[in-house]
Image (cartoon, rainbow, N blue to C red; front, side):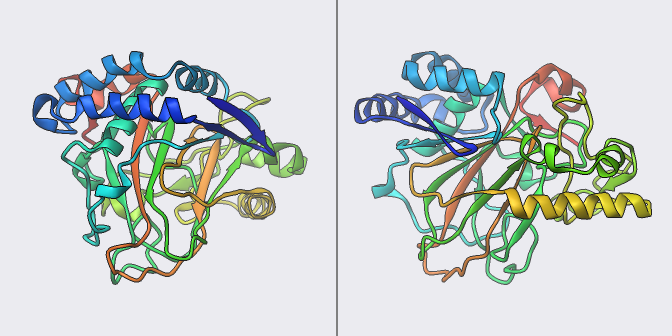
Amino acid sequence: MQTVEDGALATATLDLAEHREFERLARTLLPLYGGKVDSPAWVAATRQAWEDSPIGLRRSLREFRRHSGEGGALLVRNLPVDVENLPDTPVEDGSVLREATVSAAVLMLIAHGLGDPAAFRPEKTGALVQNVVPVPGKEKFQGNAGSVRLTFHTENAFHAHRPDFVMLLCVRPDHERIAELRTVCSRQVLPKLSESALATLRSPQFVTEAPPSFGEGAGRAEPHPVLPGNLDDPDLRIDEAATRPVTGEAAEAMAELSGLFEASFSRIRLRAGDLAIVDNRVTVHGRSAFTPRYDGRDRWLQRTHVLADFRRSRDFRTNDGYVLEK
């Protein structure tokens, strides 16, 4: 396992032996408990199996969880995703993965290196592994079903228990290999902000609505800061498509921050077997535009959310399960 810093982006690559070892481990999980990805018993089996993952991978995840670095994202390459046996890229709106596959097992295993997998009931029916694919007729949608430029956002920025980490595993890239996952960390833009903008972004002068994927009436928007938390290393809570400034100075500060996002982002062109892990506490992500063909071979990512401190969301989860009900 080799981990290198490429500018602000940390990259860890499994060698051939680690790839084979991890694939063998993933395949042992497929028949367990009927291979039901959302079964608590199957998730528990993946949690136990994580301890048998390649030691280099476990070390990289442990270090990233402790501190996600200047870029707030980690790219893990050469993961097994069983490319040869992939079906056509789904085109249904809200599609998810319910049956265990190599890629689903990989996501669940790595989730346990960061915390616990979690999902939100209003979003894609609470599935733990969700497909991120272009959907016919939703090209201009500001969400995972679209194919236009996706603006920078904290995942589920409106939510009190938004994910600590967002995992995006590529099982099939776009045809032209031009689609970019884009990330910007608060640590990259904080030194570039003016003092007035910094002070405003730290004050509760912003409201964020639930994203379209949650549907109407997903929650009341309360004023909040864009840069909450520690003054030296604040969190980042913003969705350019859903966060609204409530004062003139807030609008100016948000415009300054958005300009820095555009000037500072890291770009990742994901290929099959690449996993991007975004530290959602301090990093926003977005996507460049691409052109789907709807021919069964379009871009296909699989997504899993992770909570680092599972107990904090206990009141939102029935029977201490993995799905937040609201």
